[in-house]
Length: 265
Image (tube, rainbow, N blue to C red; front, side, top):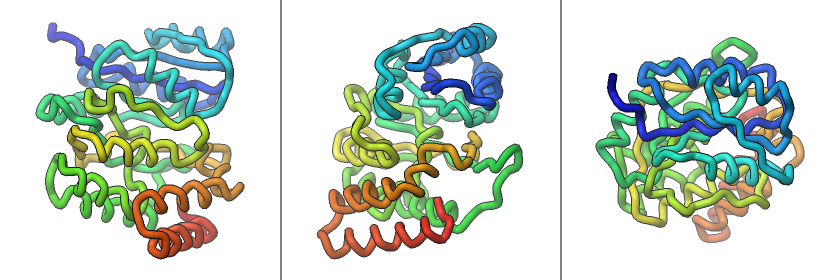
């Protein structure tokens, strides 16, 4: 029997999700078996603890319940292995996610992150590729230019300058991300902001050009709530301002705000 991958799935679980059992089942059914699985929560319950036990996951409770950034940071802090995927409780991971992610990770042992392509789910059905998804794929190709990994700060920042094309639940954090935490004052763009800081540090960004996970879109998600409340538009404006001179940042922020009004995510 081969050794287990040096990889952890951490699941920041908030209250109860009707999709959490399916998420955990997908983590436990990887073709490359043996990843550590941790369910981390600030809203503990007997139901959550039993679900973790059912799928062989370690159950960790933290306090206080202080928002998504705290949940992610506390979940990552629970990981005992070098490569860490923050698995969102509503999402699904295809069977080869770990095998193909770790194959790329082993070729770039100092990487900050490895990301994969993904699909979106509406209910239980795969959502057709939207205009926003096509734009994100274009931004990924603009950043990577056909390469599997990029190391230069300019390349990594180019990937992020026109928006955040990286799906957070597809990301596996590597040794190059050690010590980086998510800002707990942000509600929507905390991943984009963290990737910008990582881009300015040594460590490769790596891209697996296969759809290896399914990200669920629903009205109660933090992103959807943030779009409706105007939080995303404000945070986007701040991210663009950190990457561009003011006139360009303003134009990009306005373009994104219009896309949300038109139903884009």
